[in-house]
Length: 259
Image (cartoon, rainbow, N blue to C red; front, side, top):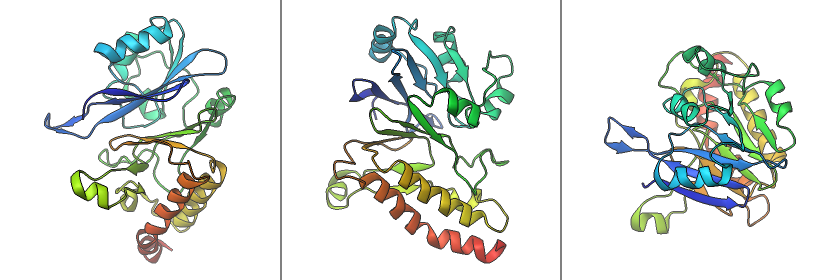
């Protein structure tokens, strides 16, 4: 996959970047440049911009002067954090607790991106949600299910890392089988090992679909961007609920073990 910018709306640009496992398999990653209602921009997630993509971002943000903040939403997406800050050192830097712990030398804003304090600060333009019933920062650094989901109200766009995936299939298969929104495959391993975890997760996913029922676009890391998925009202919300239904076997197995 090639690096590119996908224009969701005049105020929301989804940046599709490269992320290679072992330097070979490119599973991609993302960041999104969003213009707030006050005219300032924020970057959702960090990415080391280069070439035409950086030139476009620089033109829109007046070489970073109008970039208000870099907002890191996934605890384990840390590869580009230092590079993004170096490119735009005057932008406020937000991150999760793991970002703070991993890069204590960086000038982090005190409000963690998983906190209500942070969500309130950007409530004019965004709504944020943290998955319930699952580990937000897993002890196993290979388990990357949870992230802070960001919903941009003006463009009706959901930006999500790992937690939700949308993977079009290649070639003829992709034309025959319609891709589906699904929960990340690490769900089974990240559910909290306690009674009630699955009930909390179900409630969170159901409320997410209800709260963001008017979502039209979905930008997912390591997979793809679903454009105009909400052309039929409630389409993306419906797909989230269908993903939850498909996850029932996993949830029931967990409940059988932990209650």
